[in-house]
Amino acid sequence: MDKALPRDHPLLSRGHGEAGAAWLAEQGHGELGPAVAGHTATLLSDERRYPRWAAEASPEARVVAYADKRARQEIVTLEERFAVWLERHPEHRADMRRAVDRARRLEQEVCALAGVEPQAIRRAPWVAEVLRSETDA
Image (tube, rainbow, N blue to C red):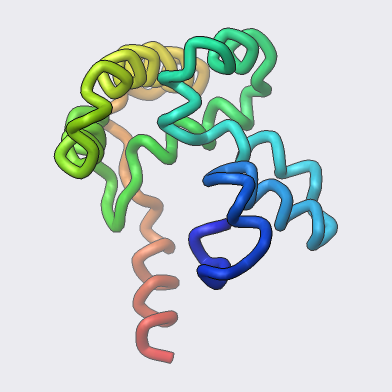
């Protein structure tokens, strides 16, 4: 959500995830805030915040966090997603290693609950049609 805000928007000072959650609350959708706030890769690497999130996150928040790690313009593996982040931020190598390990556990948990294997996850067929119609508009 916060990536769509103008660069000078005051909520951006809260950081990625938290800004999106605050924006949703302003729009009357505060119930979605915890899932948005807790979806970031930096949360997975944070030794202080992650244990609490892991203990308290709802199933919906876990699905959003996992989906974020698999989705770009296409569905990618965790390894592909983290490789892009590591290339962009090599100074955070140790944090990324910790985050990808936790993301793998999250993947196992979410996929087990959904009854699917990670390699079976595909974009829903209707998504491509919506994306095409938005670019044609």
